[in-house]
Amino acid sequence: MSTAAWNRRQFTRGAFLASATASGYSRLLGANDRLTVAIIGCGGRGTDSLLREVLQLRSEANVEVVAVCDTWRQQRERAAAVVKEHSGQDPQQLVHFQDVLARKDVDTVVIATPDHLHCAMLIAAVKAGKDVYVEKPLAMTMEELNAAFDAVKKSGRIVQMGTQIRSVPYAVAARQFVVAGGLGKLLKAEQSRNGYEPYWWSRGQRPAKESDVDWNAFLLGRPARPFNANTYTGWYGHREFSRGPHAGQGVHFFDLVHYVFGAGCPTRAVALGGTFRWKGPYDTPDSIEVILEYPEGFMVRYGQFYGLGAGNYLRLYGTAGSIDATHWTQPWSLSGEGARDPGRIPAGAKLPDVQSVPHMKNWLDCVRSRKQPHAPIEAGYSHSVAAILADEAYIRGKRMVYDPATRNIREG
Image (cartoon, rainbow, N blue to C red; front, side, top):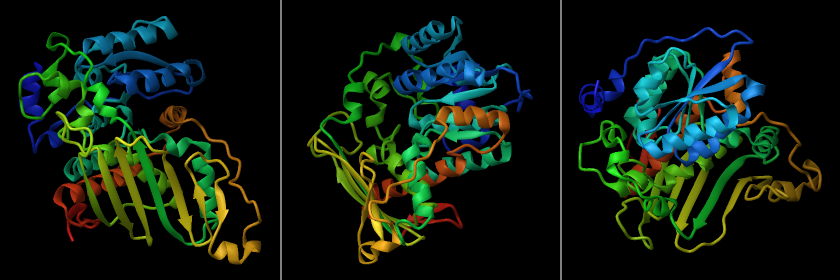
């Protein structure tokens, strides 16, 4: 089937989430069976990070990369060369993810594509019987988020979200510290993340020729239009394909708070932002401030600014003290109840020393054991609610509310 036909029949707006069908085949793995992996999306994240992580685990986890898939020829070829360099094997190079999912010898897939493709590919993959590692943010709308969550839960497949902070020892230690009552009652978390140039600006200047790209496969359900190299390579800066820094990078922070604080979805959000410095062909904001409120009784503030090149900070607060998670150095400080009653927490208390299985290995281990990984689909759901709620508040200029009963967002 041609890409254009697939777009028309399977991924038209409003229907594509429910219509991704596949055979549901999945291979029963023995303890000594080699696990096969396909990489879908071979850009910087897919090739330089995730593919290399899988290849580093070839012997330890008994895995083999059998296919690489991307709509840009040069990226497919580069990924295949990396596999060849590390394993001596030539993976199959594919343009369309549907062809990857049709291969019965592919056990698992790593999805590292532009944001607008995550849910559609995840739904199709679990319906095809594949276990999945999928990059963040999981979703751009509540419609696709609910559909993806339901498909994963129904499938029984093992899904790991790419929010790797949950596998970092310091985050695990902070979670243990908080669970043990080290911060007292949780009150606030805040991060300021700054930089001089938006991460989509230089990406959008990379040369891409229409003859090397399957443009329709990239659009996948978005309205047809002539090829645009800036849209294709700088998709991070176009809201149709990525909401902006509060979604693309804010999810790291939102997920860290959810993990360490043991929280679910936020209930209310307000946001302000805009493009103040980097004006050009993009419509994602280069500056934004978000405030979220949680039913557990704390608030979260996230700010991201491009153009000033200032430093960053990340702190978690409770009635007994705070954790400075900016660099995780000397993270603990007493305040409030902790300062008034120093014996409650020993002076100079530190986060516990812990070990944690790396994120990719955790997923591969769970594919074999069928246990839930560090960042299951529930984590992707809650971080996406936070990002979507923030984005709705930003674009509407109103306070927005998430209703867990209806799994939807409204003004309120």
